[in-house]
Image 1 (cartoon, one colour):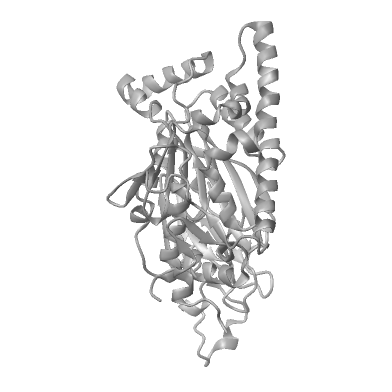
Image 2 (cartoon, rainbow, N blue to C red):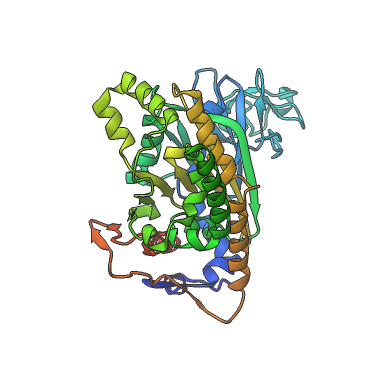
Length: 437
């Protein structure tokens, strides 16, 4: 018998704390799959991942294996990765090209890129039965809803709900900022994707992304080591490459992080502002600015580059860093297991050194082999294990509660280390988990 009815779920989230079972109970996870990940818009991929007709990428939405594929008409289609004949997985590879059609490896049923039936061997065997070889029952099922924004493709397993634009709301700034920073107005995915398997609940990753209070503690050893090298380089040459700051920035005093701001929106989305307070003036950055001004003009270039947004969370499964062209998508697998995909993008039309700099951040900070990522993953696992203990029933979300500014459902923090983003995440969690029940 299910242990969690509507009242129990509502009681698990309070304004200043959340019950530990939200992280560690397999039954809660099953409800999350049904009521959150089967309903929200989920990031599928970028249109540049499937450039030619027949190009595909496979991905998981909730628990559903899906295919993103480019059609002959140039449109991108999102299909269930399942043959309508006997349920065989149609595509087993991560990516590739199906050439002339999607072909099932079991009985050679063939489908067009949009999922419509193309050819069924031994079709005469179905004459006089209820199965129509040209009908819907013989087509690959399409995602109930699909849409894209600035080349970023999303799909929803729900037949109805808010449109993609309404659901993204103000978090669209993540995609606008990334694409606007490209002189050609769009980005292109870098094909190599880091994939990290976390032995912890999916929520720990998202909570960590805008938690600026942890950075100087968790990553102190990394930051100090980078600072020592940076100072040695400065002593020898008078200056150090801007890239060194990617790691040495973790040595900022805790009070400096308090000067940042998070803005928290409906549906659980949050934005971190104020991390990069000054535009860099090194030769690489100045060359890039010159290209931008030639394309956009000085006023528009300044408007784009002065927008001080460092990190955006599109809840429940997307973390985006627009100034560094990074995107991380989470794919929950179990209550204690999460797959994270880390993607990097090129700014089309930008000088090559700008790409190389962002690639350096991708490898130094976000890749699975870095000290930074290792620090975080270890903490995620320790949190997950710690909350198995009965030593504490509740997880605290108290920091600066009641001291944020709220208007029209939007909460803006006065102090950067406020736990407002976490409170916003769990407000959305409770709304989804109890909606329509």
